[in-house]
Image 1 (cartoon, helix red, strand yellow):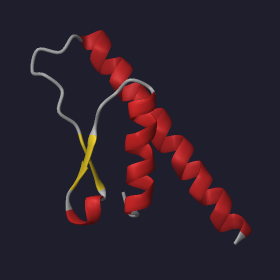
Image 2 (cartoon, rainbow, N blue to C red):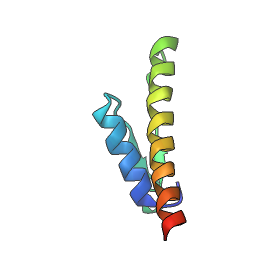
Image 3 (cartoon, rainbow, N blue to C red):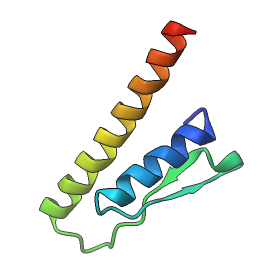
Image 4 (cartoon, helix red, strand yellow):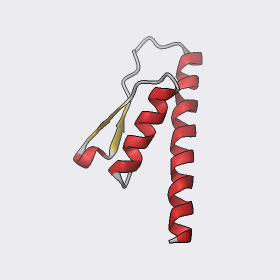
Length: 69
């Protein structure tokens, strides 16, 4: 993610929805996933859905702010 603040918001929102992920990399701008190697497909899909929703919501917020700014 370009902005570490967005990454942190995505990480926090995922946590609130029951998914633990981490930020990593330069300026904590990377979302780090660490699923178990033996994860069930249903759990993997559920986790991906949580991440996708968190990313989409936060990107939409940024786009709204930029369009008004």
